[in-house]
Image 1 (cartoon, helix red, strand yellow):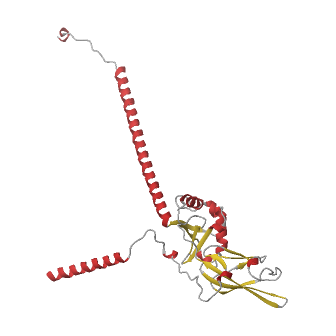
Image 2 (image 1 turned 45 degrees about the vertical axis):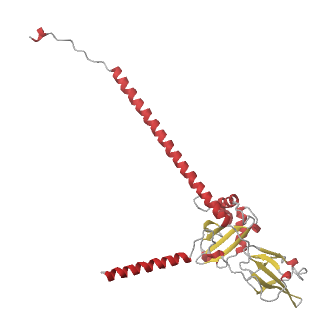
Length: 310
C-alpha cells in the first residue's frame, strides 16, 4: 500500500513539474503578432553593390516603375517587343502594352537584378537595372481574406486583385498593402498603409470594415458585385495589434456594455408594461364586479304569518 502511494505521489509530482516548466517557457502576449507576420528579411545584398542606383519598392505594395526612369531606357522602342527578365531575386515585373510602365507586387524583401531585353535591326540590346525591395512598415491592423475555390488561383495575380479590391472600397491601390499565404487555400492579408502605425485610427478602420462585411460577418453584396465573379471571397476577419488591439478591446467592451444596458432597459420596460397591464386589467374587472352588484335586484318575499301555517 505504501509503495502504491509513493508511486502515485511521484507521478503527480512529475506532472506538476512538467506543467510548471511548460508554463514558464511560454508567456502569452496579446500584442504578439502571429507567425505569418514574422518574416525574415534578406534585403542586405552580400556583394558590394551600389544601392544608390537601385529603384526602391516596398514589400506588399504594388511597385510601379516608369521605363523612362531606368538608365539607358529612355529611348526604348515602342514598335519592338521588349521582355523583362529577372536575373536574380524574387521580383517579377510585367510590362504594360505600351511598354512605358513596369508593374509588380513584391512579396519578399531583397535586391533583384533585372534586364530589359529586345532585338532591333538584328542587334540584341540588354538594359540592366536593379530593384531594392524593403520591408513594409509596421501596421496595427489587417484584414484576413480567404478566397473561395483556391484551385482557381494557382496563378493568382496579386496586382489585379489589389487594384480591384481598392477600387471596390473606393480608394487608391497605393494606400493598400498585401501579403499572400498559400496553404490549402489562398489567404490574403490586406492593410491600409495610409493610416498611422503608432496611433490607432479606429474609426477609419471600422469604415473600411463596414464597406466589406455586415455586423454578423457576412460579406456585403456590394463588395461581391464590385469584385465580380473572378474573385469570390469566403470570409473577411479584422485582426488588430499594438495600439489597435487595446482600442478594439475597449471598443468591443463598450459594445457589450451597451448591449447589457439595452437588455436591462428592455427588461425593465417589459416589466413596467406588464405591471401597467395587470393594474388596468385588475381595475377593469373590479369595475365590472361593482356594476354587477349595483344592477343586482334582490327578491323580497312577503312575510308569512303564523296563522296561515296553522
